[in-house]
Amino acid sequence: MTKFIRGARYTIDFTLNGKPASGHAEPRMLLSDFLRQELGVTGNHVGCEHGICGACTIRIDGRSQRACLTFAVQVDGRNVETVEGLAGQEGELTDLQIAFRKHHALQCGYCTPGILMSTVDYLERHPDPSEEEVRDMLSGHLCRCTGYVGMVRAILDVARQRNSSANT
Ligand code: FES
Ligand code: FES
Image 1 (cartoon, helix red, strand yellow):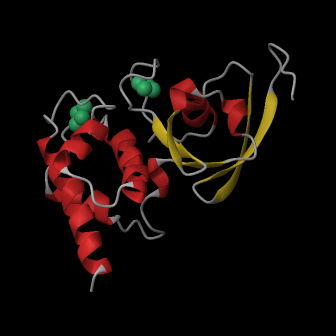
Image 2 (tube, helix red, strand yellow; image 1 turned 90 degrees about the vertical axis):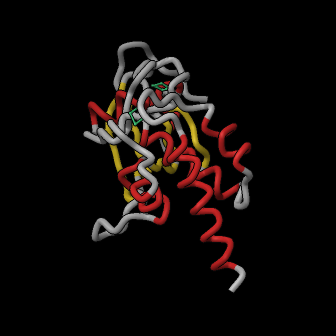
């Protein structure tokens, strides 16, 4: 096990949205701060810094996690995905992003990157959720603007579309 020395800066080599990335951080630096301040990945929003609001949610090795509850050094050698990695090479939006726009699932957008990253992970593991299950998943995120109705509609719409194209 690596022994970290307080105050020293460590090199972190990892994969960020499918590409090699590298930066330096003290052992105490949060992944959310590392992404934003060291690498300029500002789609990773920071709200509470206590694991409550969900604004900082990213994926690590395919599972959604709070970047504010993860130290930067913990992602050395791992695969990190942020909201910046969702759209295609030419900026084409995913079905989920399109559905969020269609159903007015965002207003200020501060909560949106984290909710999108949680939902990507959730739909991979729960491809046919009920409204109640979607609401349960969203309960891990705070949105002060929307009332969640548009998000629920968007997520159910995407699940329905994916399931109907899988069955044709
Ligand atoms: S900033 Fe990470 S959960 Fe709120
Ligand atoms: S859209 Fe403003 S906090 Fe959710």
